Amino acid sequence: MKKGMIIGLSIAGGVLLFVIILIMWVVGIYNNLVTLNETVNQSWSQVENQYQRRADLIPNLVSTVKGYANFEKSVLTEVTQARASVGGIKATKEILDDPESFQKFQAAQGQLSGALSRLLVTVENYPDLKANENFLQLQAQLEGTENRIAVERRRFNETVQGYNTTIKRFPNAVFANIFGFRDKQYFKATVGSETTPKVDFN
Image 1 (spheres, rainbow, N blue to C red):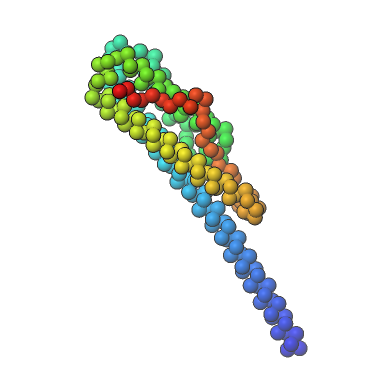
Image 2 (image 1 turned 180 degrees about the vertical axis):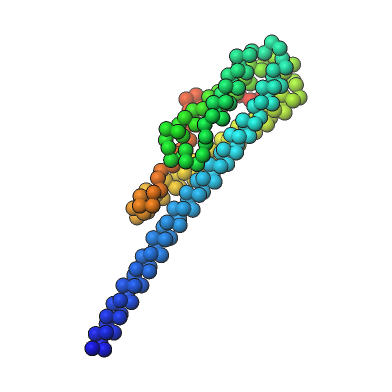
């Protein structure tokens, strides 16, 4: 009787130990997925910060350029409308799980980049404006912001790649599906993006 009881306790202890190890393993996978998800969200916040910085610069840029009476009004209108279009999209972290919303956001940002590029190219026809100190400072800030946007978008894509790869690997894929972890969207090159917006007028 005692021998059978000891064997029974040993088996129960072994099963309990196995269950504890299994639970700890699942918790480890879950915590890793949460960490990667938060890394993607943090990286997204940095992209948003740079886009916001650009959006904040635009009114000053438009205001400086407006002082030149003969400047093409249609170019300024295009920039202003593109900025408003971008501002109309709520770029929450939930957008990362919605491919259609993400594409709309990216398209609006691409439209704004294109409008800014055309504005800065048009400035070439206005030597006084090109030499204006306020304009030169805004131009330098805009150039820096465009570079920061490119860097943050690259970093964001790297974190998304790490996250997406992890949730697709076995056995993570099983638990990612159970816990509701879904693919995040990448920034993709927009048509014409191989030509960088020209912001250097030296």
